[in-house]
Image (cartoon, rainbow, N blue to C red; front, side):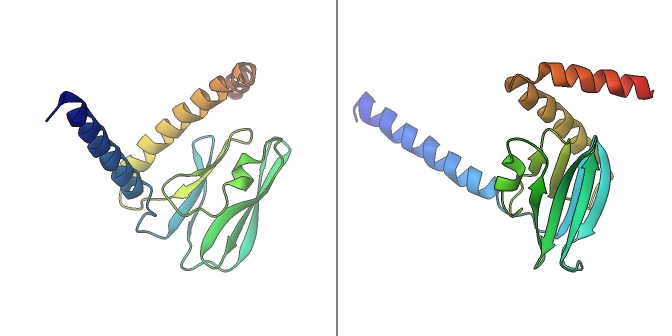
Length: 153
């Protein structure tokens, strides 16, 4: 077998493994618990299997996000942010959380098996949040937020 054929087969195998792994990782978690987290504080932890259809308003510095629970699913219905990426993410149906960067809000499936995992996830989401904001040129906003948090202490 020529070296070129070997490289093509190797790339195809790596591509197949990557696609299969992505599908596996992005599948919906087995549980029905969700949580909304704002500034590393869990605001709500709800079991979608038990919740009635409702809308929850979550405020942050005068801006409001409206979370909708309907037919045992959850989504961000409205948001007072300029880009509305969180609203466009539609229904939460995978392990990828719904994130509103400006309002520091994360809606995600909750793993009720371990509080240590939740703490590690909160630290990761805080790092992820700042990294994304820095990539979008919001460094000044990060510094302002940090200075406000320091004032509260």
